[in-house]
Length: 303
Ligand code: HSE
Image 1 (cartoon, protein in one colour):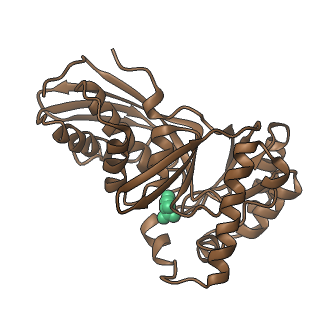
Image 2 (cartoon, helix red, strand yellow):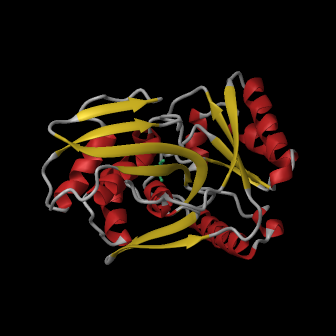
Image 3 (spheres, protein in one colour):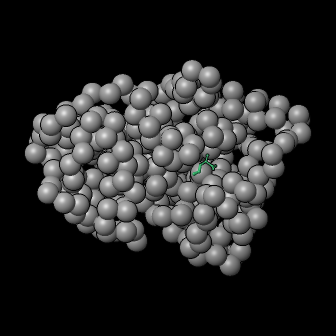
């Protein structure tokens, strides 16, 4: 396969994976973006600003671009330039954004048009789980489920104005470590609780039912085990609710806490979460944003 464009640029959103009870199956794209530009080159060139990542061909964006290029039968090198304001090891999908950015940029540069399902399978294979990469690829809130036939996914566009306040504590959590904290088996009542919550959550978003959303953001499959990594977690969630948010959840494997809120109360929810983190002895910064309905695949093609 030959290069068909001079360069390809991709904007990839950050993501809140494990949305509520949707452990490994529900993710939301949010309005914080990595920008990735890829050009053909004689040898690997890597320049990534804003992130403490390798600046050579071991870079995750670069490696992901190479995997996608090889899938399309191309074995040349690339010049990669990228900026990413997505905090690393914060539960906001920085590695998923890197993988999706590399895969989509290489695909566009090479003029390939693989099925979205194939891109999802490739990105999920590199990442190890599908919820971040699905939301980064498709935008909005994405349900992604695996069965014998592969991944099935559907994008749910919230039918109500939905802001997202992110409280990003000055802590880092490695996803692998946070996964090892999870039990291999769970009690049936906890599984049933999550089934009810995740079904309510998807219905509440799809129907724009803020009243349902208030009671649909609980989780018993991962948050109780991972809360130990996030000082003050329960109080931060409670503070967001007291400030008027629909609810708050651990973003990905943490430590960021994401509050879903009506736009007019989102800033207050963010401040309340920051205050609760401060009381727990943890500094944090707040990002008030919204669900991003556009994913990496929706952005215009490069020049
Ligand atoms: N679903 C993944 C996990 C997301 O919880 O491990 C990690 O960001």
